[in-house]
Amino acid sequence: MTLVGADGATYTYDGVVNAPNVGTPTTPGASIGNAGPTGITFAINIPDVVGQVCSTSALEAWSIGTPLNIRSLPTTCLPGDPSVLTDGTLGTRQNVLVVTDAGSGTTGADVKTLLSGSQTSTTTLALDPTQTPAQQAAAIAQASIVKPAVPATPATPATPARPGKPAKPAKPGKPAVPAVTSNLVVIALGGDNPAAAAALTANLPSSQQVLWVVPPLPSGTPALPPGTPSYQSQYATFTAAHPNVRIDWLESPLATLTTGTVTAPSPVWSEVGAQVVASSVAGYAANAYRLPTTNTAASTVISFAEAQLGKPYLFGGSGPGSYDCSGLTMDAFQQVGISLDHNANAQYQATRAEAVSEGALEPGDLVFFVGSDGSMTAPGHVGIYIGNGQYIDAPDAGGVVRIDTLGPGDGFVGASRPLSTVSLGGATMTLTGMGLVDTSSTDPNKAIARALVDSLWSDDQWVYLDLLWTRESGWNPAAVNPTSGAYGIPQSLPASKMSAVASDWATDPTTQILWGIDYIAATYGSPQAAWAHEVAFNWY
Image (tube, rainbow, N blue to C red; front, top):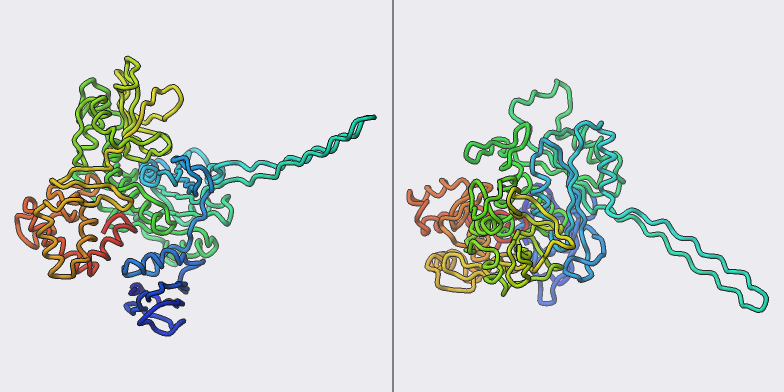
């Protein structure tokens, strides 16, 4: 493994070959060896990070050979809430509270979509602007309690014996049940400052993990008065007093991000800006707190459906101004190259091979309900599951595209997972825990890319490039990310960067592949390292 970053670190390890002596301080760019035949035992101490660094993450980075930026390592492996998961098994659930305000637009809903899953339960809290900071802080503290504590029940004393009858023994009391609190509180506000961070987290216990999101300052923000500490130093003072609060500084280019004519952030973040902020926050949470995120294809489907919220229902409608239920799902899944018929029952019959139980639902699944005839075998209504028991659908005449909740009496028939097998670019893709994996060798674009990989690196790097570009675009040279505008097989952002290779970059997959290979080599050194970054941050 190779270190990158601005600070040194001290490592201890066993079972490592070609390594410096145990305890030797290392510097950026220094190799600290390879795993020996018996494996390794790994520990790390980084002087500039407060708290105990999660050695599991460091070990994972080592095992896949990725450069490791020591500042990006998580200092917290969240313990989780032992409970029954949505798939019916016992496991560890992460409870996340996302706090937003009117200025952050749909960020709360977007973060919830990205983080919700079988092992993460995400709730949102929109701050009431009429409340004082103290009242808002109290609301955050209250919302962070998932389950209130249950006091202990005292033992029942023994009943005195009656003449001729034995005494009844004392009944033991029930022990107290501690409160279950959110493992993580994410606070992402349209406008904020260090004083607000201190005020709004004041009522949270010192042990509460908090991720405070700092957006770029809007253009035209006046400079601080002379002699006033910078925002960076004010936040440093704040976090020094609150060791379980992390600061996520959003990149300054977000302040000028444009998609079409939409600019974000602004006094109220636009829809595009909120989605980009949510993606950044979810990527940070996945890396820093070991939280799973929704796979890219599901996120694309859900983001499209969310963008249609509020549009009127129209029987036979398939957008862009109105939808019926199957028209909405048809258009949403078309965004990832999945063709569905414009009929709820037809979609049910076509995807039954990928059926999932209600307890195993994941974001991006289709959920089906009985039609007007009450038929359980030919459902007449369909929606898209988004997590936490909710789904997006176009319900009925006179209604609008909205978010509904699964519940008793709603006529739930079943669910399916169209994303488990996807046909894109003539190749069959199978959804795995890490993305879509190509199971064919018929794509000529892949043959070109594989030859380039073999010439620059080695054949064992091919699997990582295939994973990377399958997740990013499905190897589709016309793929467009609906949020960022990234384009083509390698998802160049902006797309015009590929003109460095040739002017036909918009239509020629070979041009796109040549640019993408060069970008990976210059930025990451290898497809393996690029894929590792994709897994950690959901972008490369």
